[in-house]
Image (cartoon, rainbow over all chains, first blue to last red; front, side, top):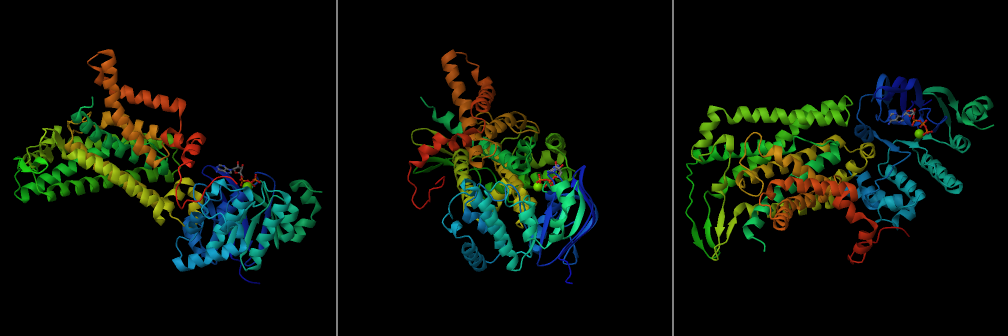
Length: 238
Length: 364
Ligand SMILES: Nc1ncnc2c1ncn2[C@@H]1O[C@H](COP(=O)(O)OP(=O)(O)OP(=O)(O)O)[C@@H](O)[C@H]1O
Ligand SMILES: [Mg+2]
């Protein structure tokens, strides 16, 4: 099997004095969709943030493509090829769509950036019509598209995506997950936190269950989906 | 009746406040702390400017030329060549920036890294203010400094003022115009324009706006937010430095007094924060407008009150006027001048003004 792109080794992490992750070990396989599920407040978002250096790591080690990144600041991780789509506040509301996209590709050569923006418009044609609109005035669905587009501009190796369907109508939610799947088909590695356990695990290759800051299950997504005991106890589905 | 002399001195004072309020707001928007040491940075800059100008004047064998020359616009006095003033501007800017960066890197950033909260940071800025004050005390009482400043500029380090060496114009009609009036007004306008261009027309500006609005999102897009904040500190220090330079030459203007280790930092700090708050705390252009508003209000509202009440000592209460404006702002328009402009009613009014080439934002 291919080397995992990210390896988390016995990590304890949290927010300053409040520890939220305990002894977490995890491998993110390259080119696959890893779906993280768990009850509210379990530490799913914290786990994604920890991968990106946005929390305090007390002990343990995180490597990206074999390189130790445990102490690397987030902006350096972005340059290594990681992208993060937040659950909330995932676009710059005060900036226009164009400024959001330009900003995302701020370190790309101008010609490459324009080319990437064109590519993004092919995936999300609706954004093209909203170029000069402030992102804060767009609808929830449009904003989610822009958030994805911002991530895509940088052509990262791995996408960390936190609950992209939260607050969207079921039809839109399906569309968003479909976009995630398409991203993966284009070769991007995806780590997805998803509230809708069933829909999430169905598009996933690997499934991870987080409960109270610990990994309670780590294996094939289909297997997690089939575990009625876990589903009943932690995920509220029967 | 507007007295032209009152107007020019008030404009100088208002410009100084605009510069200071801007610096306070820049730091609040990025580092999220009220920097109580801010006006003291201006004093550090003023001492540096005076010292370097004195050294320059001595080494270049400059003697002040206080003879007015007759020109087409009137009698113009230019005590020193342009290079002399340039030395002052550069020294003030550089030292303002250095004093600001020391505060950020040596004091606030280590505290931030340890997870210090807003209150600890605020106390730390007060501590830095006291440290700078002590350093200035030591400086302005040192023998070497005294002798450097006294020859050839005849300056007293404990009450520094270079008003006598300002460029000035006396028009045919006998009106006196201080060079600092033109310099400070031009600076305020130029600075607002430069900031607009920086923030809205350059990539660095977009990065700054992004880092202010949503620091973690900026970080995950590969922007070094700490470095962007350091740039805000540089801008803040530079504007404090320029304010210090103006104070040095305009010490008789409005509420400005001769510079010493304490004065005028301890008094102007109130007005400078008032400008920042009235401007909306989270608006760069609001802070400039707020500073100007407070500056003019302190003079003209007290004048008005004096005329109404007939009480001659009303000017003593200038700062009560600015505090009253702050109180009214917090009560009725908590997001300040900037917030007023963003209110739905103001938006409706503004949207009636056609702006060519700007796509209409807002809902569908
Ligand atoms: N910025 C923060 N500072 C302090 N504590 C936080 C912060 N963010 C989250 N927490 C705490 O960490 C714990 C885990 O939160 P986290 O957001 O990771 O949960 P989650 O699994 O993503 O939940 P949800 O499904 O509701 O998004 C919670 O107890 C939460 O209160
Ligand atoms: Mg979450």
